[in-house]
Amino acid sequence: MTTTEAGATVPSGESQEAGAQEIVTDHDRGIHGYHKQKDEHLKRLRRIEGQIRGLQRMVDEDVYCIDILTQVSASTKALQSFALQLLEEHLRHCVADAALKGGTEIDAKVEEATKAIGRLLRT
Amino acid sequence: MTTTEAGATVPSGESQEAGAQEIVTDHDRGIHGYHKQKDEHLKRLRRIEGQIRGLQRMVDEDVYCIDILTQVSASTKALQSFALQLLEEHLRHCVADAALKGGTEIDAKVEEATKAIGRLLRT
Amino acid sequence: MTTTEAGATVPSGESQEAGAQEIVTDHDRGIHGYHKQKDEHLKRLRRIEGQIRGLQRMVDEDVYCIDILTQVSASTKALQSFALQLLEEHLRHCVADAALKGGTEIDAKVEEATKAIGRLLRT
Amino acid sequence: MTTTEAGATVPSGESQEAGAQEIVTDHDRGIHGYHKQKDEHLKRLRRIEGQIRGLQRMVDEDVYCIDILTQVSASTKALQSFALQLLEEHLRHCVADAALKGGTEIDAKVEEATKAIGRLLRT
Image (cartoon, rainbow over all chains, first blue to last red; front, side):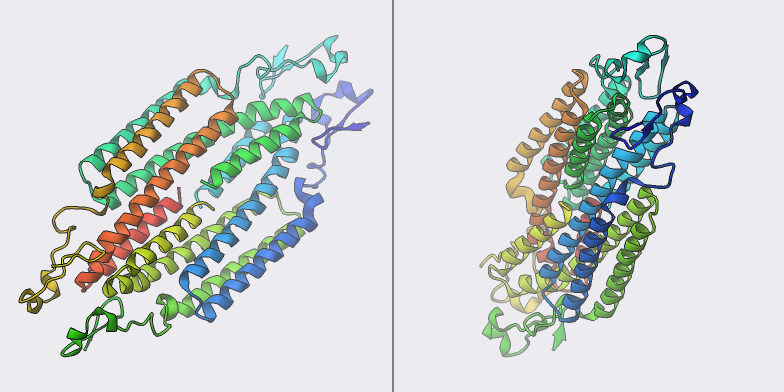
């Protein structure tokens, strides 16, 4: 039994005949693409939380507007960068899984991902 | 012989044993995801070209700055929306194809797509 | 003695002759444009901090990637909206003050503000 | 008669008594902030028009999706950069003019400019 890049268990032997429907992926087991980087994600988010608390301090201490705006840009960039990493893992796992399974799920997954990208672009 | 959502030809019968390496996809044949929407894409782009020419007229006729900025926002939005549609087709075809083929290509494709999304986000 | 929209004290009577150099603005007194909305800003930022903590919970509880991305978009939008309000107050006070004072300060202030807007756009 | 940075004619002599209401600015004369850079703006926009035509060629010649997306990012960036330059001139002239005139016009102008920036951010 081998595992593909997409984390799907490729059935071998008799299960082969059973067809694509029986492919069981990490995703089916409730393991999303990002779970391996969980610690890294939490570390990133805690850093962003620290930046937001830094912004509160800046406003409280009447720091010059432009310097606050620079810090807002840094926080937004950090959030976008976190989103990109999450998205990359999502494409690598959930979307690739759907492709392996065949059927119409890939369409739904790609549409869903594209809408999420659209929301990120419009902010 | 059936065609999956991702446009890949699923091998049947004896070709099955030959393994993933022999899957021939639209993408291999030089047919990219967006070729079916080519006319629609060209129509969209011609409309955007018209908007840019409209901007030149506005500058030439000394239209009020804010009105020009509104038109710039509309053109940027149209470009982003074109990019999103292209990206959706790319994910549905090229990325899904790579997933079907197995191996490490999916990683390369997902990384490439994520970098393209990152470039769109940062503009 | 009247106060203009920009918060500058318009000199009357004999001080008129003394010229623009003696205009003393809120900005000179270390009161930046945003100080009046300080409480509102801090409330907004605390809400964003709560959103970021919500994101950590979502990652920790293995929530579906797309739902996390939606929450990231909401947080980014909230940050951008905070930035816009700060920028509006900055233009109304600091930039307008520089205009009232005359001289080259307005050029420096406008360039500085434009660069800050550019940084916001590119994130 | 001297001209301030904001392009406003500072009244001297007897016109002084007439007060702020009579300040006549370039803006009043229908000369917007950007008229001096008109040629440069038109050159930029023609270059962007060329990029959009390049995109049509790329789609027509079935160029790889990711390469098209890279070109879209470049065009969007060029549009945003044009918008930023226009905005800088607008702040330097129209907004600064409004500040010089006093009254409530500065509020209206700043609100208008902020809304335009918001539209640029959300694309």
